[in-house]
Image (cartoon, rainbow, N blue to C red):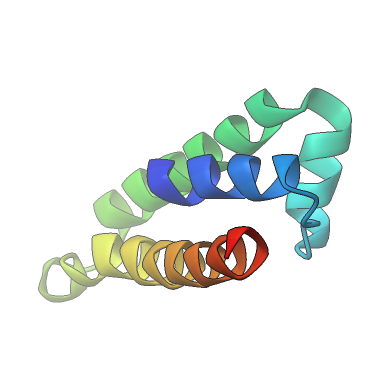
Length: 85
């Protein structure tokens, strides 16, 4: 998640724009700290879900957080490389 936010911030500095409306609102309201706060909130939701879901599916909670962040990090990386290359 931290890699995703860091790459997003770097991409924004290169002139790319945030496409997620929730993240865009967090950026408008609090800048980079807003993005970090958004990711922190997602982690808190994940922790709550991990406590509330049945034991057999608990390992899926971190996976459900990690996979979208990993995809976003790859997309951000490709976009940044397309700008700087």
